[in-house]
Length: 272
Image (tube, rainbow, N blue to C red):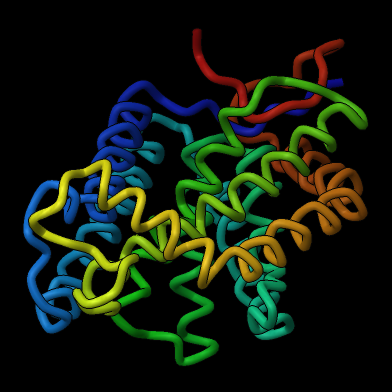
């Protein structure tokens, strides 16, 4: 039996695409424009945070207005957010070991791309409250985590261990992707201009990307690898039972489309 959660309305899809494009620009715009100083970087963070929250509210209201998310689904978002945020202090990111992505990936897989994006955003925002982790990095963490949840909801439909294997591989890849995005958020501003791996406003995009790759290998590769291996182990061990619980909860809540008999378990049904 395939348990469906809720469909992602077309309007929400368009908003998600716009959010993804704007989110990527928020990370990569220094490749196109002079990024300025560290002070400028920090002063832009509140505006980015406001933009992320505004887009999240728009997605939520759009889904509510089209019956994509009802009160039960909203309650599930709250529960998953609280559980995911509570996992963060348990790992504290030591050596890249982070538990917070487990529920973001599995929640996005079971409930769809829109819910996955919201779950990534709200989980990191809530965890910042619990850990006093507010700073100019928070909006970037929220956007990057939202991308992780969004992508999980777009994976192909599979079942059994094939689904677990794909999710584990996805967790491995996105652990590096998240780390690269977060590094890119501060690399142009914090390293200075005097090293061979520094950002240069006068250099070409290709040269700056080469510098960034060398910077990332030198400073973050081991950390990202720790996060990637943590995701793989957690998904391999807990992925199937946790998704079983989430799908059972969605079936009992009975939001969205009716269950589809005979189809493989997968993310939320998306209209053709």
